[in-house]
Image 1 (cartoon, rainbow, N blue to C red):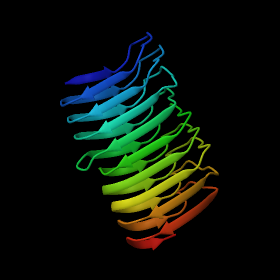
Image 2: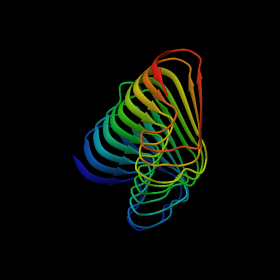
Image 3: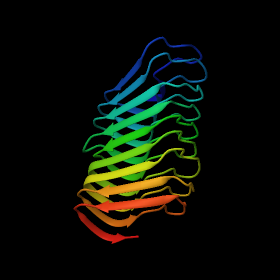
Image 4: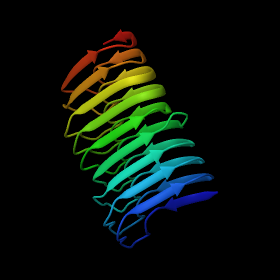
Length: 231
């Protein structure tokens, strides 16, 4: 069992890419990047093939940087997954989760660390709460969420608690079962444009806006699928 795992250094620079492979085991905190200081000249790749992780971050703890973070969750269980860092910034985030993966809370961005560019999420996992943006941080680019399967309790196109999104939000549902789908955030109000396209799948409640969060404008396109109510 591991309490805290860093793919990068503590307070030093890393030349080249970082690849962190987690095959199994129980981990409390796992970071793709550095801990306190230091720059990563390449990009970060996090691959989870199994195990149980309480907190998984695609970027660092407090060491800000401008690399691209790519997370591939192939198997296992993650309680809290962040595409970005705890307090560390990152340039861009790409997240892919396979069918059968169990995630309690998924955040496309960081906890309190900003994402300066785009966030791309492609998921087929079973997720309790999915926030396409950050928890309480800014997103400088666009957000793209594609759900290709699995079951999702609550899916949000925007941020959770706070933070600004400078780009727009695109949500595409190709398959899966979703209880509540929101085009915007939970409590983080903003003025971006949200586009939701339902190609297939089962959505119980579809909201163009957020739960308690405002949004600039919303467009909803339904091609196929089963939807209980649209607001």
